[in-house]
Amino acid sequence: MDHRAIPRPTALLVVLALMGHGAVRGQPPTDPLVCLDSCASCEKRGDARAALRFAQQAVDLARRSKDRGTEGAALLKAGALHHRSGDLSQALEHYLAALLAHEDAGDLDGQAEALNHIGAVHHYDRNYERAGEYYRRSLEIRRAQGDPAKLALPYNNLGSLLEDSGRPDSALHYHRAGLALRRARGDSTWVGIILSHIGACHDQLGRMDSALYHLRRAERMMATHGSPSMQGATRRMLGSTCVHAGLYAEARRWCTDALRTARAVGDHYLEQESCECLHQALDHLSDHAAAYTMLARFTALRDSMFGAERAKERTRMDLTHEFDRKLLADSIVNLQRQQQAELAYQQRLVRERDQKRLYLYGGIAVLLLAGGLWNRLITIRRSRNLVQRERERSEQLLRNILPAPIAEELKEHGRAQAREVADVSILFTDFHDFTRFSERMDAQQLVGEIDTCFKAFDAICLRHGLEKIKTIGDAYMAAGGLPQPWPGSAAAAVRAALDMQQWLEQRAAERHAGGAPAFRMRAGIHTGPVVAGIVGATKFQYDVWGDTVNIAARMESSGEVGRVNISAATRTCLAGEPDLHIVARGQQHVKGKGELEMFFVHRSFEGA
Image (tube, rainbow, N blue to C red; front, side, top):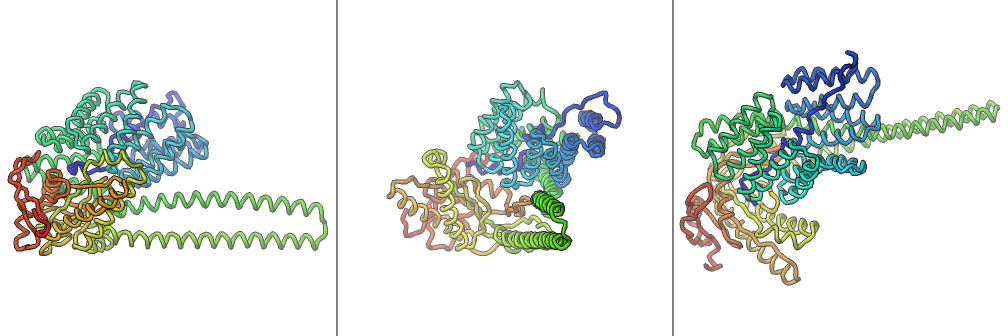
């Protein structure tokens, strides 16, 4: 596992999916298809405002003519324009309305496309579970249609989702399946896009030669066949991989070009990612002033698009949509029941002219209506109680996943300021030979064993006062000295790592005795300053950045299985700790860092 590449929402795969198609020409001025044609022309000229105006006009005209299919297409186009401009809330609102329109029109293609776009919004929001639900619904429709060519986009979306979720091996399976379909159709633009994502997966796996090979091929194809946005996105991905490969000057060149393109076309996602890439490249090139400027711009863009309040608004919008759909279905059933009751009443009225029986059946009808209204009231109350319970559950989850001071700040202000914290000890662990291990177990067993190990690590971190940061696939990251520095945090991090190794050795002995495979791991620690803050909008994550994190990752990858490898800075913090025995390793070469002094540490009673 390569800890240098932290997954983020991948914009490139959804760019082509958000592009419109040309409309039919020669229609009367009041025809919504003419407006969609004008919208596409404005997009090609780069006039996003005019394109959005024509798309909205097409929506209005389609509604007047009660053409639900064209209305859905126009809503998708307007949503895509909001999406690319960074307004995720407006995009989601249009996509949900488009889904209803296409369902009313019975248009399966439109439904699949709307589901894909809704999944893309959740994907950008890093709500990967919700995004996966919509992507899979789109894939089910495409499979039911029986056209293999239509499976390419759902395959690539699921591949991108797995890639951003830190599962590059699984992502490669879907990307390669989509690549075969695109090549069969001769779609050069999509071939270039998928090659770039295959390169990004190799980057996450630490296969830098393969990553650079695929990304450079993709960049050459995009330069010929791609739009400016696609070219910029590919160059940003190539720049980020160059950072991870230590090619900082080349990374600065690619990311500067991507930033220039992003600003020219008004693509805020690409601008955000380009600023982050440039921050990393410039920081390694010791241009700290320019690096800080890029970091500030990246933070501002991220907060504007993925702020907590906006994410909550989109979540409420999605939940309201689902509730309205269920309410509509209930209303249709009740209406059918009422119609049946009315028909029975009329039949009884014809058969029996007796006034008393007429009053009797009328009273029964009133009672049925009252009962229906009472049931509706109970349903509404239950729905409100459900929403209240979900709100309380969300607050409880927030307190569980964030440090207490950060959670309170987030609840009070809607956001948490990033802070620079000194003397933080970053702990990385990574299971040894994970790919080979995973081939010997089915998916359920593999996930269950990882879950057992990480729950044990959570308990160890809690016992030593460490703050769990996150898990990335089979890797575990924690920190001592957060959110505020405290004495002895470095020693606590070391003892926690030793306890993790000890627990894992005992676990391995138990599993080997039963004939089952078991994990072993490397652990590394480095102490230094970091920038700490909140990452994400819907699934909040407390994260850390800075060179301290990169060096800690190198300590882990340069260590040995079953041992704890620490840096010289952490070694200095362990003075006066008699229970910890330090073994010098001397200078070790680290890619991208040169020679770094390293030490193995174990408890004194364990021996050398």
